[in-house]
Amino acid sequence: MLDGVVDLSTDQPLFAVEQARAGDDVLAATFARCDADPVCADAAPGDTAAGYDALLERLADAPVTPPGGDPVDDLTLRAAAGSSTSDPYSREEFTDALNEALVGDVSGLDELGNAAGGGPDPSFSDALFYAVECQDYDVVPQGGDPRAVLDEWLDVSAQQGIDQLRVGGSYYGDLDCLFWPGSSTTPDFDRPAPVTDPPYPVMVLNADTDPNTPFVGAEDVFRDLVPGAGPADAAVVQLYGPHVLYGRGDPCVDDPVNTFITTGQVPDRRITVCRW
Image (cartoon, rainbow, N blue to C red; front, side, top):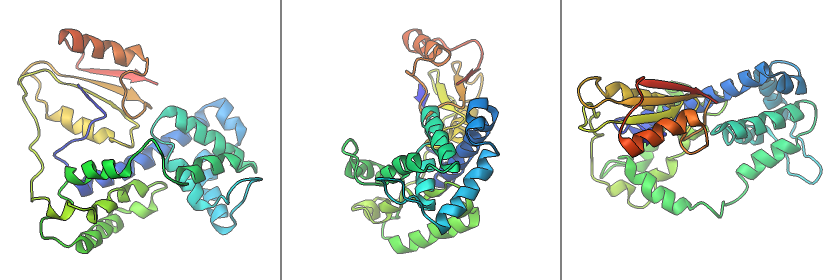
């Protein structure tokens, strides 16, 4: 059972591009959902995406400091948006803060955006994260030059238009790995071949709005599982769902997974679509 799927046959540069584009797509979906919700739309009348873009320009030119808070500028707004895309609750919290800012109150953006980049999180270890993350990919080939690899990453960013995305910052999330101890001594290795016909059933779960493990990865993994080549396989897709689906209390997701884990049986339909 794979939940929040990474296609391991995808190399690091492509995965970084997929993450950046997925984050931008999720933000666009968040704006569209607000526009379609009367309560959210009435809080700051107008096109939400256009409001975001206009506010971004205003804050770049003239940051605003709320009472007792820190300056809110365009980077604060981007940080608030980027840190809020992983689940629907955070997206709603962000659109609430955005709507308040559009009518003059930036305190919500201050809380979300400045807190998002405002110091270490005691529940998270950067050292442990990078010790694992930097070994997952052949970031700097053995004997390679980290600075040369950095230039290649920046070239890809320019070619793919990453900096033109509203929230493309995740593309640069693994830059630390270029200079992380041990990364440059990792032996050269190729990405694994796709799994096509395992001798066991596979269930794949992913939201179509997952910026952490983009939906395209789950699509690729599931597509590689050739129907009829082995045991039956299944996928559960949640529309507008969060990163990692199982165990959040939605029976549309949890029931088929529980049945699969306890009995080995997959649903009759190869693809189950759930709505958030």
